[in-house]
Length: 114
Image (cartoon, rainbow, N blue to C red):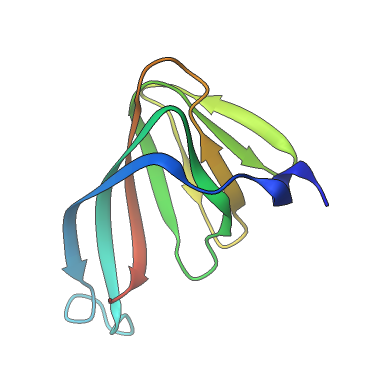
């Protein structure tokens, strides 16, 4: 089993829902889906895991503060303020904050209505 598959469980993460919109009335064919925007804060040493996919949950991330390390396909990539990444159907990853300050991201995705 690769290290990617052995990612630790989530710890040191807070998630704040900023906005959500039901997409059914907005776009034909998207009934049962919502557009969601969240602020995710990862404390120093925190992990957003375990390994998870974005099949059926596309999105994008933008870093506001700190540095987030994105682990996918055996590669660890650091993203700092003003940077981000897409999360498409092929994304399988986990995140961590290796830094000494809280890392804050804005995450926008399309999810099934709760």
